Each structure stands twice: as structure tokens, then as C-alpha cells.
Image 1 (tube, rainbow, N blue to C red):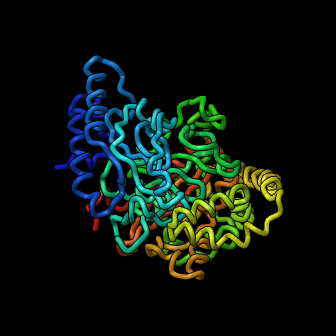
Image 2: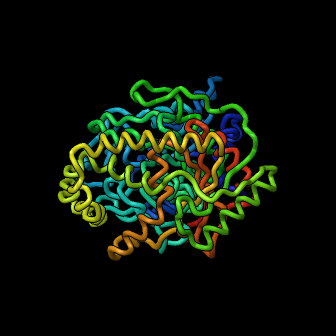
Image 3: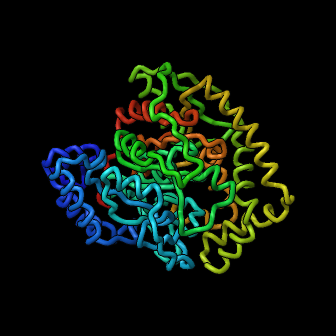
Length: 465
């Protein structure tokens, strides 16, 4: 018999709205699943069962009164510890913020609850959300439920691990350089990085972010089905005046021909054979679903986009980050600071202004390219998911990780949406592909993603190995 925690968000919400099952029963099943498997993977690092039950009861009361509970009625959802949830610490994976208790919730949390979701718990992230690996000194190490020797990804590693293990139907993540897409890839689920301005975000508990983070960091959903990502995006994308970057763009744009463009080695990125095989398999799946797939040799610059991304990310406030990492003492954060210190300290005072000027040029090039190629099929990473902690072995390993992540790092510079679709396993190791489109055309990514998903995906949720 299928357990409640195994259902997709869309199916579960439908059952709750029909009163086939109550939100309270669903919450109890989700809490039991969390208790059963979270100790082995440490994906959820803070949760309050009584509050979960109270929120579920509120959904049941709304249904009993004939009110519309929302598209995510009673669906258990996790949120990342780097966004505000009233009454909880916004730790961002650091001990320095263990007492940073949010007085109000972020727009993401408010919008999910308004859509009827029940917030099940808060998921782990690396210190300062800096790495594609998820460990820190305050919450500990999150393990990949498919293979504990692999990274669960980062920085939304706890979110993706929770979704893969059946702790909640959906997970909230954030992405400035792959922090949604890469964990989804590593854990064998799907993850959507929305366009800049699609999902309102704001943390009242913290100072305003630097301009680089404002231009590149977004919130989005991680889940086990493309249909779930679609409904989650709609729930997250409702208006909130606290975010001046929010854009009232339609969730569905005008139809375009079902033509996808495949680039195996964007900007010369060398990829391993297993990643190439996954891309070619995804192309065949699209063709089987009636799509035309064209192959192209290259795309606009990713290398320069990666360089500009780092300049915008670290060019304003590197000294503050370095000092915070020193005070925190987290080895992973210190390794990132050390790797970029010489570069950051050599930048001229106007590095951010220069980067913003070049960003406009690269964005124009990419928008022109995507006008001609509305759906782009790319690697998520040049390699299969890394061994956990690979970036900490030595300098060569650190550089290897960063080189493999060009599509993760570069695409956010232009504010583009990206969808990581899990397509299979190489042994026990997940593999998948990435779909990219123009700003505010997440619908095209999801449309192509559904066609790829129909060809088969890794079983989920799973019991952790």
C-alpha cells in the first residue's frame, strides 16, 4: 500500500481537498517519516511537531467550512535555514546566527502557507551557503540518501536529501550558483531555479544583501515530479511588496514550436561520458514526445559569465565574508575564502561597476541567443555528483569542482531560469540534464522537462542507504 508520504504533492493535495484523507493524518505521516529516516541523513535540522499539527488542523478547518485551502492544501513542505520563518533561527548554517530569531516570515514562507502548505521543518545548508557540499559546525553533515559517499549537493543539500527520502513532498531551496539545481541532480530529484524576480524574497532579520546577490540569488522548488514543481512555482510566485525585484510576469507565455537545442560542451566545457550519454538520452526522449532536437556547437560565453559572477558575488564585501568565516571557523567556508583571497584582494575598487557593465553585454548576447533557441538542453555539471567533501582534499580538487560547475555558476549572472531534471542512475549515482530558457519562461523548461521525465526517472522517495 502506498503511504501518504510517498505521494506527490499534487495527488496529496487533491486527496485532502476531497476529504479522502485529512491534513492532520498527512502531517502525522510526514512527522513519522521524518523521525524514521532523518537521523540517518540529517536533512532537517529544526522542526516543531506541535506547530506542524496545528497548521494541518487549520487546513482541515478551512476545508470543513467550505473555504478554498489552496493548491498545496495540507502538503508537507520543508524550507531552508537561510530564509526567515517566524520564531525560528535563520542560521544559514553558521553558529554566529544561532540566536538570529526571525520575527516575521519571508515572502516564500508566507506564500507557501497561503497556498495551504504545512511547513514540516527547516533543512540544512553549508556554512554561509557557500559550497556544493552540505556540512557545518552548527547542524552537522547532511548525507545523500542514495549513496552516503556522495555529496547531497549544496547549498540546498538538506532540501534535496529530504525530498529524495520522502521527508515532505516539496522542498524550498535557494540558488545563486547552482544551489537548487546541483542538489537536485546529486540526490536524483528535480529542481527549478526561477528567473530573477519571479519569486519574492526578503529576510527582515538580516541586512540588505550586496547588489551581486540581489541580482543572482533566487528561491525555488525541489521535488519528485515536474507537476509538483509547476504548482509549487505558482504558489511561491505570488506578489509581495517587500521584494522590489519581483516581476508580475505571467506563468504561461505564448506557445512556441517544440524545438529544443542541445549543446553537449557549452563554451568548451569538457564533460564525462556518463553526462554526455544522459544528454543524448534526454534528446531522444524529447524526440519521442514529438519535439525537434537540434544540436549546436556552442553557446554565448559561460567562462566570462562565471568570472563576472564571482566578481559581483565577492567584489562587494569580501573582507566582511572573510572575517565572518574566520570567526566561524568552518573549514569549508575558510577554504572558499582562501581560494579567492588573492584574486579578490587584487581587484580594483570599481570591480563591481565594471562587472555590471559587462553583465549587460553578456545578458544581451544570451537573450538574443535564447530568442532563436527558446529551449536549451545543457549539462547540469560536467561530472557525475562528486564524492562528498571532494573540494576539501587539496587545491587541485577544489579547482576541479569549480571547473565542472560552469553551467551552475554562469547562468545566474543573466537571471535565467534553469531546470535540473533527474533522468537515471549510473550504478547508484544519479545523473540528469539541465533545461534553460529566456527569463520568465519557466513554463518552457517545465514543458520539456515533463517530456524527459516521461522517459523514466530514478525511483523516489527512497529509504536512505
